[in-house]
Length: 372
Image (cartoon, rainbow, N blue to C red; front, side, top):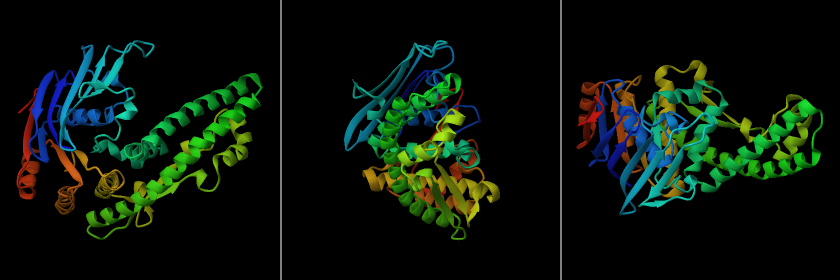
């Protein structure tokens, strides 16, 4: 599943560029703000139909331009395959006016979700610390992205659950204003939400049982076999079905004007040696923890889907000592990582390290929106 060539037009800070890749390992150096992160983000966009760093496609278009286009030329299952993502139009105040398309060999997808999982990709970036430090929404987002790449039905069910949840919350909020709850509509929404909610919970539970084991093995390896990392699934649905949860929380929901129980409240407990990594972990431990999580994600995509992953490493050298880096790069050489892209601002450090680990690697320099 090698990415052989990448064409960008008006993607973030880039005008028009073409970059060819000939190796499994690719090092991209450049000063901060030069666009090296934007380059690997465009690869993420091609694989998952979205930027890793912004939720709005309007923020992906180069400033002052009305459109962008990204073309990736891959080899998938031994066949040359072109994936194209493009946006035309700029969002107006109502959030409309933008047309987004994804095409495979010139044929447009009917739904963007049909493309998810076709090219497995995992990004590791400094902002991933939000998975540990921020609220439960960040941890659910990590989990949902991981499962969606191996289970298309999961993504469909999750989108449907979120749509129904909005309707149920609107009904509860309306009740706060009018003092009248449509019991018939509430029952319909409860039943529909329960079907999707129970399915999502079961898939998260199964995935995390496998992920926790693979993660634990790799965190132990990265830590020099000195530390035990653990990921524990926290869910109200561990004890009750969604219909039971909705019945139990009915009074709380009515009083709050929103749905207070369900899989949208799920969380993960992340620990090192039984202690919360957010509270006790060093910078190196936290980064090692996050990287081990992403490695587990790649390994499970291989186990569950039979596909190797593209790995995007943004600023991976920071906050890790040479011993942990050496262990990591030994792991990255495994076949499960189809292709690896690494960015770093310190060219001397990263180029010397990569030369000591890899027999061959692509080396690129980014400056003034030009890639050499």
